[in-house]
Length: 219
Image 1 (tube, rainbow, N blue to C red):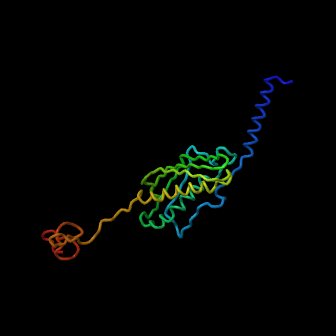
Image 2: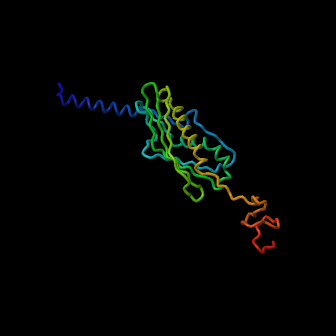
Image 3: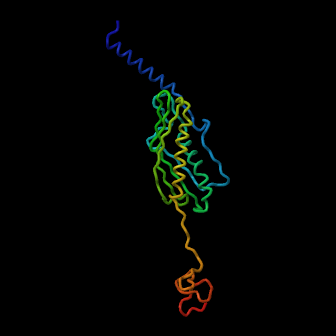
């Protein structure tokens, strides 16, 4: 007849073996090969480079309350942000000939399942730099929280929905982050007394050549 110590040891050993078996049975769901990943393709070279990186965030992303992890997390987020930002980059390619680099750092990523519903929370810090020279332009943070009545291993659409929201938020921010630099207008300006000021100064353009004429100037 086993002693109490022996019985406790056997129970502890059985629990450890069961835990290891549970870890071994953990299912990995690769996001990039799951249906529904948002990808938008553009024509020509888009002057926008997306770089993603995680800080203290696990990839594959574990789902709390289930034996499921989601792989390709960073890559899928990069696709979602790129897809949302492609139209903006195409439309504004002339604003910065060298293009931009958007560094997206994942600072929070959590997924949980309560047996019926999956909830996802993602937070990122985004830094916009000039792609040529690396000059810092702006930085922001944004986050999303999404959920759905799905099985733990069918939660890819929930993750995609959250990532897509982050992509839309960052795209809306981009326009304000790197505003258009309005060049100084050239030409003549009409002044209240009916005279004309040339583009190069404050004297009246008496000879109509588009240049202000200083006293004594005959060109």
